[in-house]
Length: 234
Image 1: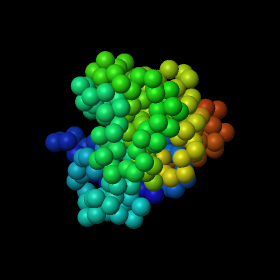
Image 2: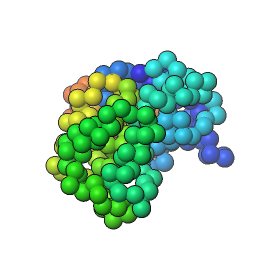
Image 3: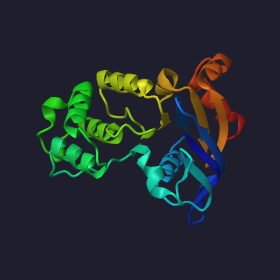
Image 4: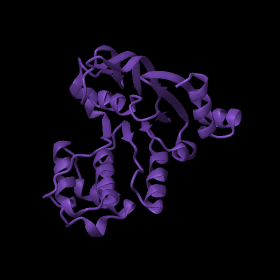
């Protein structure tokens, strides 16, 4: 579970997140939608302990992200929007490196299972620098999931993936029993897998709703998104 209270983050004079509140529950997939610059990636980076913030409180499974940083971050798997990989390592070497940082037992079996699931087991001995964007995305997703975290933060998880792999990733995400938060522009992804959705614009939460209820009210998540945008003149 991730609890966020009165969170504010500023970049100089620009307020990226303005006194926002979120409650990401166990066994739920929550989508965060908004335009570029709305604050989606900033929010996930703060929850992952990568960015600091100006005001507010964040708890990960009851651990404060500042006061109990190590315990909180141990319970998080994070896929950033722009994953930072080591181009001279092979895919296999990179995954074993991440496993060593996470002190993962039985890493060989876990890596084997996940790479087979996502379909990159035949490409693990090539250098990451030669991977396509989609292949790098797959490696990054595995590195975020391999320690079986209670809380998964995914920034555009299916961007750049082929349809088959995208579907495989979505089915895998739906089986995860912890808390999953997805930042995305894809209304289709939200409709396919999300239980709850927040719409944020210019650093403020304009809507929180159940996805099925939202579709029932507006016909689709896309229609709901533009309705909220028009209603708030943003």
